[in-house]
Image (tube, rainbow, N blue to C red; front, side):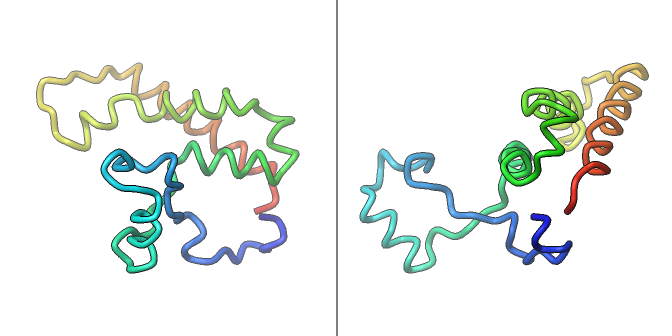
Length: 119
């Protein structure tokens, strides 16, 4: 990542899901899966935040010195608490002021990680 000098390709965060992780593999043989990719039926999709963290750990040693991979994943999980309820408009969900403050705190901790790496 540091080799890109901040000029990542637009499709960097997209990838085609490997056959072993493909949700519909019980309905499709591996050959059919690869044919579907070749014909454009299966296309690349955005990586999860957790997969991006995995890549960051692979390419930058400074991250390991600041937080463990588990700590980073835990921060993301805590930041995303109540996300689905908010995004999907579930009206019967109450979010406390303290939860919101904690999520901001976790976000700031997570973002501080990027101050230490060479993107």
